[in-house]
Amino acid sequence: MYVRNNLRWRLIFANSWRNLLAFALWSAVVCAVYGPLNLHSVAIPWQPVATLGIAVSFYIGFKNNGSYDRFLDARQIWGGIVNSSRTWAMQALEYITSRVDAPDVDAPAATATELTLRHRRLLYRHIAWCNALRIRLRQQPELWDTDVAPFLDPAESEVMRHRQNPATHLVREQGAELRRLREERGLLNDFQHVSMMRTLERLYDLQGGCERIKNTPFPRQYAFFSYVFVWLFVGLLPLGLIGEFSRLGPDHIWLTIPFSILVSWVFNTIEVVGHTSENPFENQMNDVPMTALCRTIEIDLREMLGETNLPPRLAPVDDILY
Image (cartoon, rainbow, N blue to C red):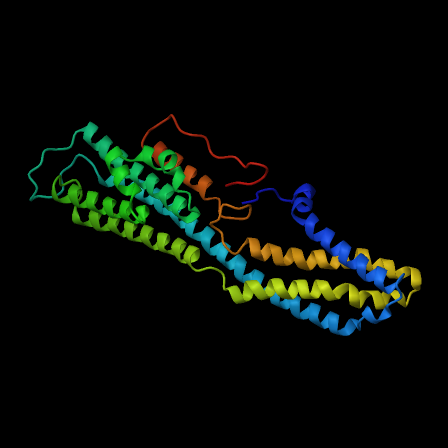
């Protein structure tokens, strides 16, 4: 996610220079054919070009609204993951105490060491879930050893690594852990168990929302024809402008080049902005900063555990937060 208030001009130029060069060459060819070669038949009336431009602007505006809605939906889902992560940590730390709440469970009170290990396992597995979900959405399985495995027992990590959807099974294992805490150790009463299971259900809902966006690409009919219509307009633009500028005098036809470049760049930039917002989980410049959010969750949960050796928050790299 780009975090600077204003885009740097070098970034704009780096992403635009190829298209600007194409616009300039095409406009120069049209001017050369119309002027020095004296083939005035290449000029077309401006009215149909203007009408096409209006239609294209409405179309790419509609597409950009849809693209932004997908990004906003994805960001809200990850905001829910952050909030639900804090809720999960609070429940794990405050519900699971040394007191035995189940009268039918013959178990000694849990020691401080046992509670610490259980708290740590529940919270660390949740951190692993967040990172596993991110890795799956971005299709980066090579990050498992560095971003997921350190938060799991080695045996559990090896099993989860080979699952089709590790995040799903990690949440399921959290549910199994809660069952054992209630039935075998009596560390959860029925209300607490149900409350924590609802939090897991919420996490499943949020995971499903991410998978819905990831597995449902932006409708190709909108994305493809938006691209086609913009370039059709860009191709016709100098043919319509040159007739208008020729009325000002023979030397004014060369004004077609800068004005054609400017208008073409505006339309193309609007189309590119919508295109780069279609898929918010691709680890691109305008995507949801899932890595930074996972690090925020890790810091919050480990600090709740009382740990002090915490990793730093991620900082933007070249104004981009990943």
